[in-house]
Amino acid sequence: MIASQILAKAYFLMGWYPQCFALFGGERRGAPVFSFLRVDEKKILLKCEIKRPDQMIFLASDLLEEKEIEACLKPNGLLLINKTQPNQPAVQSKPFHLAQVDALRIAAGEGLGSIINTAILGAYCRAAGAVPLACLEEAIRGTVPAKVEANVAAARKAYELTNMFYGH
Image (cartoon, rainbow, N blue to C red; front, side, top):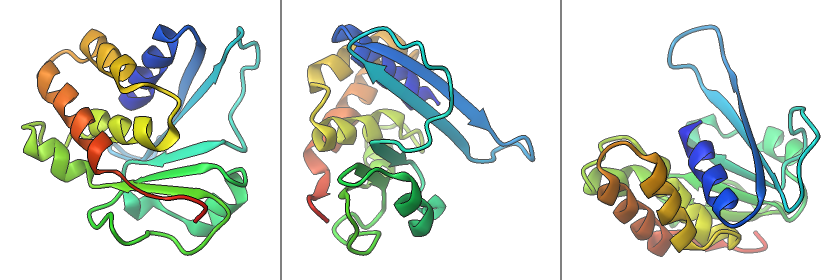
């Protein structure tokens, strides 16, 4: 959810209109959270769940369900995965673009422990090409309450280390 909020701020800084919301699993503490971000160049009036996203980001590769991704992600969409072995594709050949990064290793290396939000967003900037890294850095500096420069460094490093499999 925090990653969506930071990314929404980056889009806002670019002059776009973001709309961010989340769905929480009420079963137990620590359950997976689904966060959605809708952006447009004009005001967004639609207020509903996103059923067919253009892009999907998985902060944990163990949550991947290939059939669910195929059913949801638009053809030629972007799938970004936090994966400890980013050189090997996490999914088989599908009609979308795949990007992978070891955000956990990057975050740990910058002293952030297991907090990977900014690292995964750095990877997003490279893979999606929609948000300049400088806008993300400004959003991080204006949002993150602690270890600000470490978070910026994690975003930069992930940007550099993202593996992309276009037309995968």
